[in-house]
Image 1 (cartoon, helix red, strand yellow):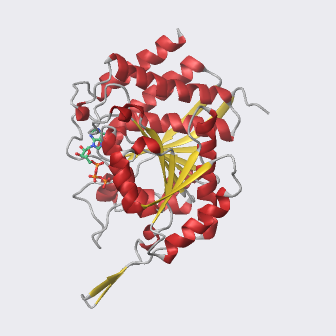
Image 2 (cartoon, helix red, strand yellow):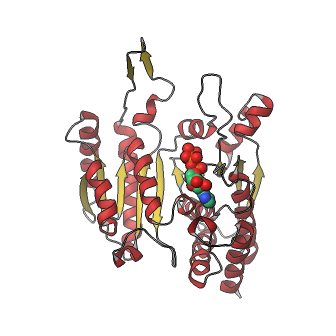
Image 3 (cartoon, rainbow, N blue to C red):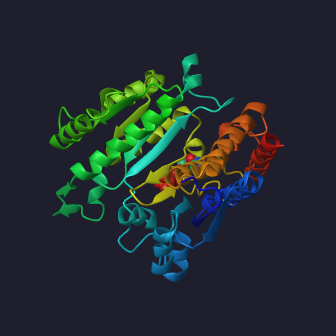
Length: 368
Ligand code: ATP
């Protein structure tokens, strides 16, 4: 049954560095969307976590605040980490990795889209239409080895890659769902498996499971690319892709490469989806080099929040949320188009607050 006046809990973790700045901006946009569109209510609660908290208290997140994320309808995360703060073993503070693993957030959806007036390093005019999705598996692959790697006698180091059938099947099903939704809006309906199946049995297994699931989706095209060739083609002709699905480490690397094609990390949103939970966070880090200056580009965080609304809309059959999510993305697009959004990381001179004002102004004019 369609949900027409729904209330959703959102656990908000601003984190460190520019995480707090872009989260403040995004909450303003969400508040505006909620009051302009109606039909849903977001009950947002902020929780402390991250490197700053660890430095001050010795814990990176309290167990109660961690659990609140799992219990909420959705999680919004800014960014976590400070270069000067490390655990005694030298590793980074990362409750985010723990959330991915404990909440089963295996599907990292990373849209790569070129917004109007944003310069791409690609000379080919076809790059103007760049709009693809990198689907990064986010709980296993090479990252399954985090905390388990070994250095033997200072002579040899080992990490183990893990690919499971269960996660790969569900990941490919997510890719199929994304490609279908895009096809319904004029997309190519193409899912490309990115791997290194010619060398490693783990990637050959990934491709085998990919094929099995794609056999169940005859309405879609399928493609294959070895990860090295995929890197080349992401630079040569990225517009030929649609949805690209891949192992964790490959996705980590290629999604940064792809972000570089559309303006950099400030333009790299992300949704991390599991069977129950969804976490929405820009793909970038805390950017300590620009933190506290009011110049962080909130675009990736704002689009991640719009993706949260779209995901909640589908999960809970609440069209008002879908409408607000689409409107936020369109408002940002129009801001870029008419020049009110000109982030400094893209060579412009609008700060975090001005960009937020511009997006809210566009939302208002869309509903006037
Ligand atoms: P992590 O390892 O957590 O990904 P990092 O330090 O490698 O972090 P980022 O924090 O993403 O990487 O920063 C990489 C570069 O991109 C920095 O120069 C940073 O200033 C810039 N950057 C990242 N996000 C933004 C943003 N939202 N707005 C402006 N610049 C950004």
